[in-house]
Amino acid sequence: MTDAAQLSRRSSVLRMAGGGIHFDGVKAVDGVTLEVRSGEVLGLIGPNGSGKTSTLNLLSGMLRATSGRIHLDDHDLTRSSMRQRVQRGVVRTFQSGRVFGRLTVAENVEAAALGAGSRRGPARRLRDEIIDELSLGEVAATRADSLTAGRIRTTAIARALAARPRFLLLDEPAAGQNEAEAVELITSIRGFARRRDCGVLLVEHDMSVVMGTCDRLHVLDSGRTVIEGEPATVRKDPRVIEIYFGKRH
Amino acid sequence: MKKLGPVTRTVETPVLLVGLVLLAVLVGVGGDVTIARVATLAIVSVVFVTGLSIFSANSGVMSFGHVAFMAVGAYTTAYLTIPVNLKAALFTDLPGWLSWLVDVHAGFLVALVVSGLAAAAVGVLTSPIVARLSGLQSGIATLALLLIVYNVLNSWTDVTRGSSSMIGIPRNTTIWLAFAVAAVSIAAAWGYRRSRSGLQLQASREDYWAAQASGIAVGRHRALSWILSAFVCGLAGSLYAGYLTSFNVNAFFLSATFAFIVMVVLGGYLSLSGAVIGALAVSALQEVLRRLQDGQFTGGSALPAGTADLILAAVLLLVLIMAPLGLMGVRELSLLRRRPVSGERPDSGVEVVSEPLDRATQGVARG
Image 1 (cartoon, chains in turn green, yellow):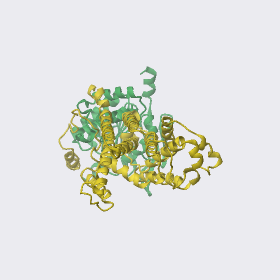
Image 2 (spheres, one colour; image 1 turned 180 degrees about the vertical axis):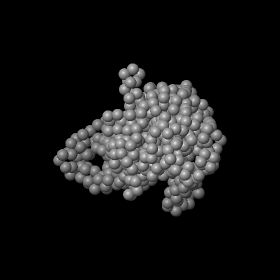
Image 3 (cartoon, helix red, strand yellow; image 1 turned 90 degrees about the vertical axis):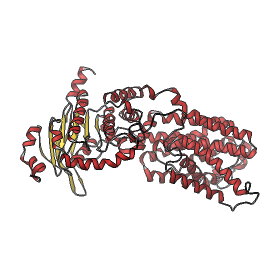
Image 4 (tube, helix red, strand yellow; image 1 turned 60 degrees about the horizontal axis):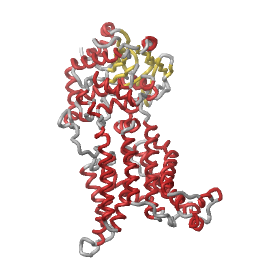
């Protein structure tokens, strides 16, 4: 990569301004403004039903916003399909992995590289690099539906990386793991993203997991923004304490 | 990653499948007239299901309309190969703008290729539909295609002879020609399967939304495989016409569709090997059942009409119950020892079942 390209990538911002969506009159997301910058990890947290996954769906194009705009730098993505956003480098994962079950791990990664527009040779090189980087070598020829839950998670991330993301939108990538495992997984994801100068939006419901792994946090409740800021600040915010700990203490 | 691409593995499956078809040829060549006919039509069926499999095995979308492509291929071959003077007698009421159909003539190989192209052209016209639809809607749409083509052929009497048979096609299909076309079709199907488009289409078969989220243009790949599969089914239609020398529009409707569906479903509609094995096995079974029904195995006492179909349907039901994805599932034919498919854990079901439990306990631990 040239220095110029690196510089231009570094300045990238994925921004949602006043984004909202309603289902049958229920506002799942209501006027949320947030931005993710290259190289940082933004944690999107909130209790169940607060609109975290809907927000991710809006950013990824799985859902179309009923209000607000979504931009990647100067490109208006508001009306773009999920595919078009992937071509621009906005790539999501799913909570349950949703790997291509009856394809091998290697085929999962290669298909995603091809989908994002790589030609065959480069797609295979990229596949091999990513499989090495994520230590999936020993299961490369294994069908994805016979992997352990942990390897399914890793395969889903490998597949997302194969699309050469500039922004990764991760929906609870550590779901089902204990806190220590979750922190370890997210820390390693952070490493993969850093190496690519890629911005990460991380949806997570567990406050303690995001505390040490995210650069900034954005807290949602009932589809609205509660606060955005550095983890240390957010943690002390009375509204966040109310949402997260209020009912229990 | 070297183990992923040895040449032997790349060509093993198509070579084995062509070998199976060759066995059918040898049976046909060595047998009497009836056996030769059964074997030749079985190989024509192999060409057809190979074509169907290019679309359905990779996309996971079943088509009930591919017999329409076979019809287009058969009619094209009829127009191109029936002797010109016979055509002048057969088609006296051709509309003026189609009068050239009487004079056009081509050698059989040209007719074969043009028949494939004509079917592919219908494939191009209909591809936007399959590109946009999934699941049940797609199945119904393909059935609608079959109905449309059938009704046009059946009703446009001046051009298609309607319900009267198309006759006088020179017998150009030999068992060896059918074999050659089958081999080329199998190679093409395997090539597509391993192509960029084929891999992406298989990914979409596994998870449509995850494929979209990987940037895969599902509709475009569906359309491409649809057109290629239409071409191969058109070849099957041409071989069929060139073997039987006469055919009726009813040969390209529901009973043919059902027969081919039985073949691919029994063999495994997600696998090329399944389709080919299914076509050969069902063709052989049908012949055995026909003879059983005629009383050849029971000392001449014929069984009631319909017994053969009844048994075939029972076999299909049995296979569907015992192996819902057919005999081959998603596997392909292979003699070499494959890597273990479930390399990670002995029973893949266990983890899936225990996962929600994991998460429930997690909630307690972490919350």
